[in-house]
Length: 145
Image 1: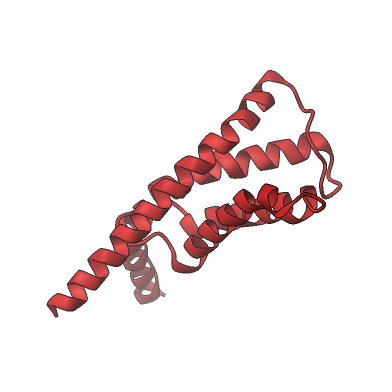
Image 2: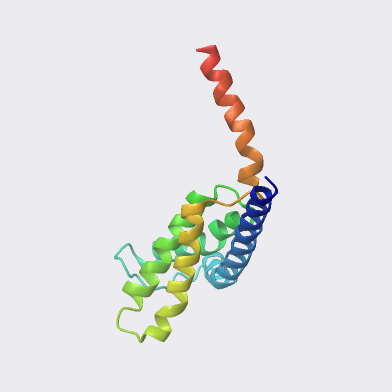
């Protein structure tokens, strides 16, 4: 029993550290893009043919806004998945002809956020605080129906 609690605590702390570390690093990476959006400077790469302005807004949203949600653990799986996509596009489309050293940072980011997409945020998150209330609401709706 004590080992179970210890394992859950360790897992929760590990995911907390990963969420905060990866999220804050990604936010610092995306801040320049957010500044460009607010300054009206939409010069940006168009790696998948959606237009440079749209690509910039989506990258800024993923790298800053969604990373901020990951930091606090709110909608973590849904927030982390677009970051994985953004980093895979950066690594394998935008930097496809570059050396591995250039792609490496985007790949590492993609792997960190993929782990969070698969595992969720852990027990020390807003998601974990909200989940019991969501479950109770679902149970009440089932009983009422």
